[in-house]
Structures are given as C-alpha cells and as structure tokens.
Length: 347
Image (tube, rainbow, N blue to C red; front, side):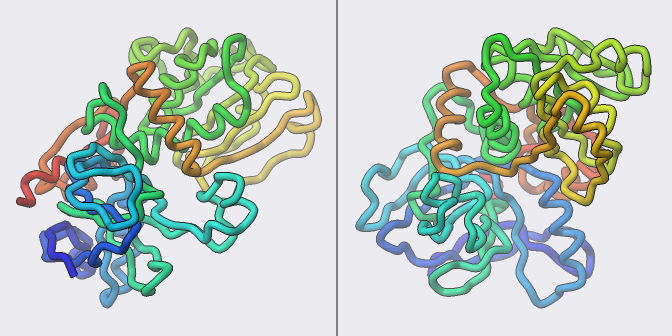
C-alpha cells in the first residue's frame, strides 16, 4: 500500500480532519497522481452531512481535481511521470454494457465507480477522494490536461464543466442557437461560457438584477429576471435550450414556457422529484431532459474545447487546511463561483 495524507470525515463533528490515508499499490493500468488542486462541490457537502450516521465508514470527498503523474503502471500506454492530468467523478465502469460501449461510462448499467464513496471493482474497497495529496486511478479515467489551461481553475471542469457540456453538445448547441441558463452559480457560470464559446446567443435567467453585470461579463447577451412576469412573458417560446442549474426545488413550468417550439429544458441543478403539467410540454412540443457528468470521449473533448476557447472556472483558491471553512461558506452559497483547494499544504 502507498501512504499519503488527506482530509477525512469526522462523523462526530461533521467536519473534515487531516488524516493518514492509504492508496493501493499500482496495478498495471494505473497512474499515481500528485493532487495539486481539487474543487469543492455541493456533492461533497451533501456527502459529509449524510456521513454523520455512518461512523464506521471512511469518507474522503473531492471528485474534480488536477495534478501531476508521479508513477505509471507497467501497461500504461500514454502517460509518463511529469504529465499534467485531470480526474473527474468517475474512476471506473464495467466497460461492457451498451452505455459504456457508447462512450457514456457515466451511465454504466452496472453503476460507475465514483471517485469517492464507491466500491473498487477489483478488491471491493471504498474509494477515497481527491481531498488528498495522492490519488491512484486507472489510466483510462485520467485525462491529459491541455497546455494553456490553468491547473487550479481547470479543476471544476471535471465535474461542473462536463455536467453542463454534455447537454449543450447532445442538444446540438452552436451558431444560430439560443440558450438560456437558469441560475448563475458553479454550474451556471460555466454553462454561459461554454454556450457562448459554441456560438450560441446566450441569456441568463436569475431571480434578481444583482447578477446582471456578472452575467454579461461572462458573455451573456441577455438577462431575464425570473420574478418579473413581464420579463418572462417577453421571452416566452424563445430559447432552443434552457439549461436549468438551480440547486433548490422549484417549479419547472416557467422555464418550460420560455423554451422554443421543439425546445428542451435540461434540468441539472436539483436532482429530486419534479412535477410537470403535460400541457407545458404539449404546447410547443417541448421536451424535458437531464444529464449528469460525462463519459470519457465527452470529457476529453470538453477539455480540448476549453483549452481552445480559454474557458476555465471562476474560482476562489484556498489552502486545503481551510476546507471546512469552504464547506461552511458553500452551504451559504457564499462563493463566486467555485472553491478550489490547493493541496500543497499536505506535504
């Protein structure tokens, strides 16, 4: 086993504490990654809160990180020590089901192995996440980090970025498309950047005017206040694609109504139950869809696109010792737009 250090959940205090961790010895297809930067996701916060009732399990969050390869297994074809890499929230899949064969390992019928809290497919051990100084991963689920992408600001691309990239590409967004992004947070700000980079005319829908200048600074041409009925009526049936990144439960009807004829509302932010009136779909032949993470081809394509267009997340960089402060602030939505931890203080 390989020894490293990371931030492990303490069930009694609902916080993370510095702890010694063990990684597996390298298998032939593995790479060892020195984790340099790891993004902080709402999923990490939810996992920590849920972990309080399971004092016996080990939880190390973190599933969007960048780093440097330090060692490779004997059968690794295209990584070498010193390579910059990125790893997302999936680290293995069955590789055989129809979804995996289609390059959508994120939808693996046998359930993809998550970067933390998953079960290793070979030895059954619990995967421990990227809030640590080293991670060992199959080379198939590590991605070359293109030159020109800042390693810290690129880390959130591996979760928030690919989550919005998947529906934008699947729904054919490009020049001539009209896109609305509902919610301007960790997902939303990247959706604006990517939709604009793809050539779409992009607007932001938000509850108040407070973020109008920020939205335009990110590339949005339009801004709509969702609490203003006149503004919402003015954009009714207008957008080919509506990317809904709102994280709290909410009524989908207003967002379906602003979708164009044959348009699609892609519901990404809140993954709980929803209620939809059939008439909101019927009038205009509108569609309700969703997406989550991305497969290997899509993730690699997203990284190359972001490098070509200079797209990274807007981040607040903190030393990893401030991880609990970051989680507390995230719970209050006190971040523009993504926290990233610098893991170098774990040396």
